Length: 301
Image (tube, rainbow, N blue to C red; front, side, top):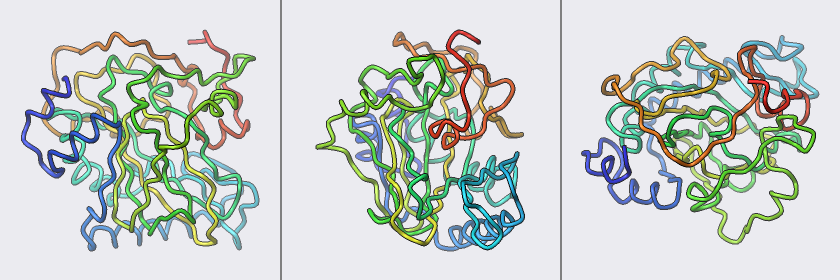
């Protein structure tokens, strides 16, 4: 669907001005959208998973842990596939967040994936400049990620930062010169970004951020000793069809969460870079950007 077609559909959660802002600038931020009782449930479940991670000694199918992780000092970088780990997360993804997604990708919404990222007081928690769509190309760019801050987030604890309008600019190469997947811009490309209008999306717990899969974004390291969790859910319009392996599918991947399946795919003529072959699995963006995982060279699809 085109932006005009999507905007002609009645809004469920967002205002028309917010929807127009998203299409013009490639992102929105909505303060305190999530009801307090729902937020409290998500926070309680998340705290339990952080506690459960204490017994882990290496990254696995559920927990991605960082350097220095221990039972006394848990450094949980990511809870993988939270939609499969607890009903509270899946209920959130197929509930309020699916309504938000419908306001921005149209009435027929497909769930793509979910993840819960953490920021710790550690320089390794920086997420460098990147675009999402190169990780999972689709036939068009009605692909979004909705983040929900589970704790108050300001400039002290690593908010999401976006480059306005970058969703309408050419995509960047996210392989290095040797052909290894890095999941980020090269230092040279990152240095070319005009930082004068970068928007740091701060917000209280229960606030959401939404960015298009083409939008340039990153998040700086946290300067706070208190971990900052960000629950992320990705959705696509039903007419956006994937043409590579899913990096990390859950049991809910590709489920219709609003509307219905469609018979025709819509194709955007703008090209998209192809990622490595994800059929053997994927760890996390932290591992890719730090060099812990060496991606396969280009052309190994």
